Image 1 (cartoon, rainbow, N blue to C red):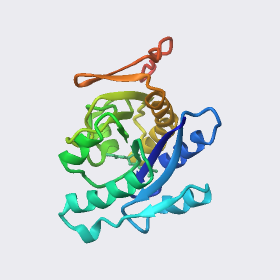
Image 2 (cartoon, helix red, strand yellow):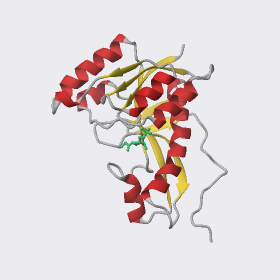
Image 3 (cartoon, protein in one colour):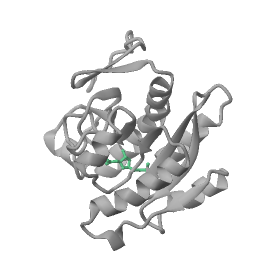
Length: 216
Ligand code: GAR
């Protein structure tokens, strides 16, 4: 049985599209049962609709600071659809610790940096200002702290002196689209387990290919 997944978005939804694409394969262990946006104007909604995925808007703005109120409506929508796993894909709203605890081990997020470096806003700018030579993307389990939690999978790119936040973001996005479906595959097939604050997986390490940057 395929695991039933909800993707939560707030914007353009390119990671959502990558997950939908991967899940279209008959042997993918999860199905995207619904895409939920907290903004009616999220471009990703149209993309999801074009792929034949049911969409739902639960506007968060009217709830203001009442996070629990928003989450009660969200939880009801997830229950109604028998959702087992959540993928946050550019979902720009913080959850209460209660909601996060309820979904612990079953809710993934993707962030465009090699966490724990550069959480929060403007991760690409943060990476460039720090002068790192390698950056990337991280899929992790969600915990109450923002952009933190047991790391499921990471992918790296070389950073060049000519990079701007836009060019770096473009390259990291390609990695995001590659690793998010793979991380979901691991979770949906039960090949990851939580070990305290760490995530262990049965997948082999990506050995044999190291990334050195810059090349002299
Ligand atoms: C992605 O780069 C994702 O990693 C980032 O928002 C973008 C959403 O793009 N998420 C975060 O920064 C979470 N802190 P998308 O809507 O095209 O997937």
